[in-house]
Length: 172
Image (cartoon, rainbow, N blue to C red):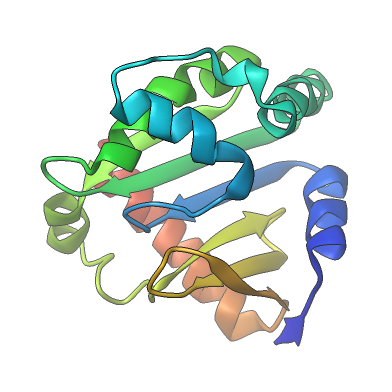
């Protein structure tokens, strides 16, 4: 396991060759650039997420990847009922899907039923080209506090297994 910077994380996300799969397990994410939009959503003021420069930049990146034949997908494990943040990501996810991402949802009960939870760990991750895992660890305030690159076979096999379980939990 190798600690990586945010810049290195971004590099891996821009340069994967064929597939990127994310498992999202947090009930919320404390991301500075989302704070205003999320607060507005909670207050009933639903805004276009493309007003956030970081989100607006992600959408053409997704579209470019997909146009080049790369697949981006994710499964979001949500509470039942979903938290406010999870409801917001369902709203925002519409633009991700339009850009070409495949986003699926599973409840924690569905994830437990297929054996994904609690074994997937308390973190989120991206599996890139089935040969790299970018693991993100979060604190109790939902802030990403560590990013690691994993390339050992045991970590890759676990991520491949969890990906399949996540897709099964989401009905795929």
